[in-house]
Length: 71
Image: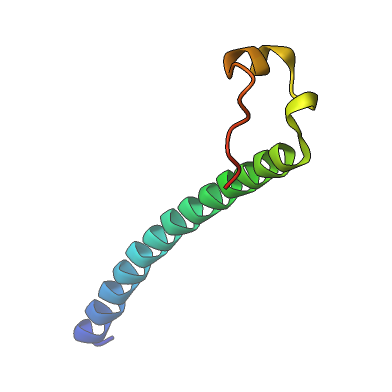
């Protein structure tokens, strides 16, 4: 067996293993951010469905009757 070819194959396998690790980390970060955005979206939907009179009394007291501006 050609030692140079075997060395090249081994080096490429190491490169691919490192790339696989980087991609797995990126995928985990993307999934976590996507989950955070889904939560934020649900919060915004709930806020847009609410009105000042339907907000809990404790919330209205904290905001002294002022409803936060919707953006």
